[in-house]
Amino acid sequence: MESQPVIQLEGIRKTYLMGPTHVNALKEATISIARGEMVAIMGPSGSGKSTLLNIVGCLDGPTGGRYILDGINVSQMSKDDLARVRNEKIGFIFQGFNLLSRATALDNVKLPLLYADQQVVADMDRKAMESLSWVGLGGHSHHLPSQLSGGQQQRVAIARALINNPSIILADEPTGALDTRTSTEVVDIIQKLNIEKNITVVMVTHEPIIAQYCRRIIRFRDGRVQDDQEITRPRSAAEDLKSMPVEVEE
Image 1 (cartoon, helix red, strand yellow):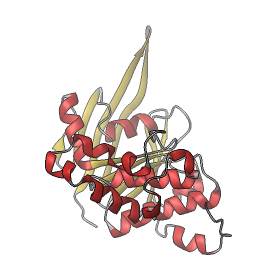
Image 2 (cartoon, rainbow, N blue to C red):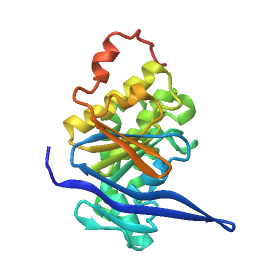
Image 3 (cartoon, rainbow, N blue to C red):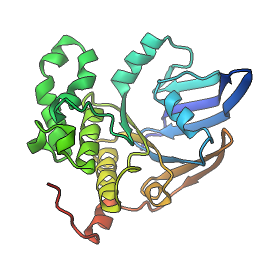
C-alpha cells in the first residue's frame, strides 16, 4: 500500500443554517486515508458520517478546513469543477440502489458515461457490459430493476460505480436493505474491488459485522472523530460465504 494519502481531510467543518439555528454537522474532522485502504465509517444517527461522505464525494463543500483529494485541494472548487473531479475519480453505491425503474441494467450502468467525452461515449456499451460481467450479471443486461432481486440490483449499482474506472468507491449503507447472505455477497464484490483493482473504499455502515470486513473503522460522534481503529485481520466475505446456505436467485 502506498503511504501517500488519496483522501486527506484537515480540520473539516460543516455548518448548516436551519431557520435561525446553526447546526454543526462536522467539527474539526481530520482524517487521512491511503490509496488502497478499505475503511468503515460508523456512528449514531446525526454523528456527521453522511455529511462526511458527501464532502469526500465532492457532493458538498466544507464550511471550513481543507480537503485534499489525490493531491488536489478541492475545498473551494466550483460546482462544475467538483462535478468533473467526481466523475473522473469517484464511484458511488447507495443503500436504495438509485436505479432508473424504466431503464435496463445495461442502460443504468451507462448513465455516468453520458457526461464523458465522445470517444468514451462511443464505446460505452462495451464498457457497461464489462462492468456487468465483472459483478456476475452479464446475462441480465436487458432486465429492468423490477425483474431483479435486491442483491442483483445492488450489483447493477456497483457495476455503474465501476464504469468510469474510479480510484475511489464511496458506499453509503450498501447492505442496509439486504439479507445476511446477500449482504455478504455484496461485500465480497467490494472486497475484490479493493484487493484486485486497488480501489480505495470508504463505506458508511451501522452494522458492526460489515465494518469488520474493512481494514479500519473510524467512529464519529457529535461531528467529531471519536475513534480510529485498525483491523489487523479483517473478515473475508468469500470465506464467510462458504459456510452460508446458498439461495438461488431467479
